[in-house]
Length: 308
Image (cartoon, rainbow, N blue to C red; front, side, top):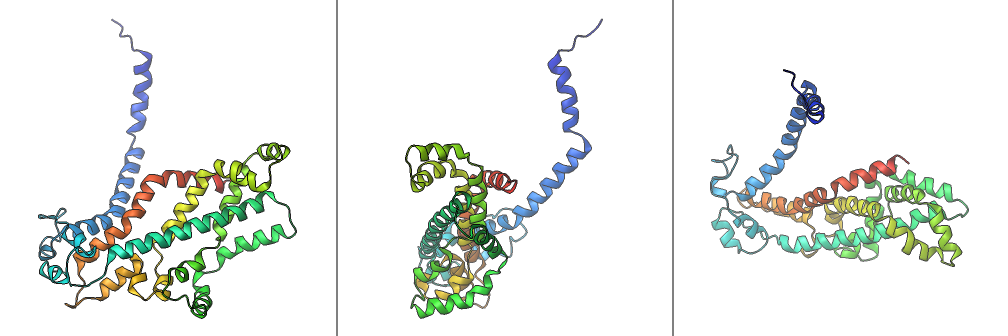
């Protein structure tokens, strides 16, 4: 008796065989291994932040803390006094991470808004407007990406000091507010891909270049603008050296500088690991959330602009 095999089953069988080939299994194993290696340090940070200080060394080999607690987060956010912190095994360092978190948010937001705005305007000018020296100026912008940032630290510091802007938010954000070479290059490549017919139709209707830029080009460029905003935001969120140089005052400290200060205030001679890891978890959490929510869009946008 002959068995009739439906076309769906006949098509599914070879597909299932292709899924479980040795090559695919080896690839999945390699990916899983790299994923574990990548996430292991982050998990160690979170686990240590949830541990009690007394159990730090006795439970160091365990995957999960036996008695998880949020007390370390309360300590570093300023919800406990120094005496209460010492009673829990902390160093008693008085660093207000809640204020540092607010400073980091303000520092990052100002730079993202100004830098994306200026970069978008410059990129549109390089993509659409005709003026003498346009190609030379754009080449200089692209070439500026090869200049190491550390070269400009000393002249920028002298300028900020002469202007009396040390220990101020203006002094911290000033060197980063203008457009960066990569942002201008990235957005220009995307603006070149927008059909000229849309802009020419608007010009025939009497629209100015400013109106076309704000009402036609920008609404079509939400994804690359969000990509630049996210990349700039992550860089500025992790910026340490410049805020450390110009903002010694504790009231102006951003999170990376506050972490360094917290680590240096070790009355017992060794770092307060549980508090330090709790502060570190607070610092990296916004970056991880941004990558989880917008990571795929960033990769697609970079691939699209990179192919132009």
